[in-house]
Length: 140
Image 1 (cartoon, one colour):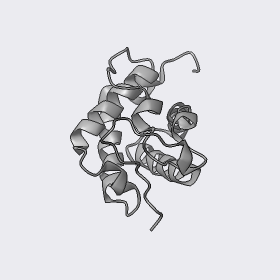
Image 2 (cartoon, helix red, strand yellow):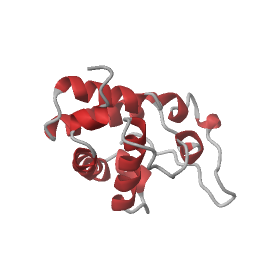
Image 3 (cartoon, rainbow, N blue to C red):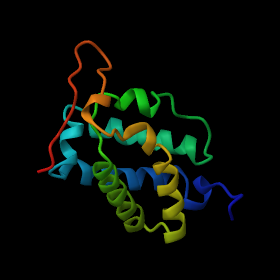
Image 4 (cartoon, rainbow, N blue to C red):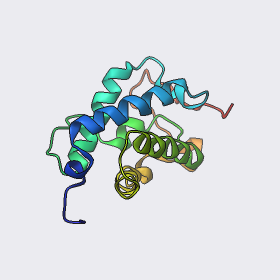
């Protein structure tokens, strides 16, 4: 089973799209996480995340966006925040009918990028552009 592409085992792009729709519906409603997405069209972020995961699950190189670290360098993402996001992701995957073992593999792939996103302190954040603000949303 480890040799099989998780992309095929989960049901391909339709499953990714279904999960990411539910996942981002939840993130955009969450009292803390929603603030990280202000001003970002949900359909665009869903599409980008789907393409990113297709490329990381063996479904072909379809993602043409930025790498996680430079795209998120202006966001103060703590370990607690990342873990909360991962919990919501796993719940969304399971709710969409993906079996537990495949859900675990999916979350492991997603979590491989944790080191590129999580910062130990606010001082590790950097603006992407001169006009950027550092995003630091306190826990409600």
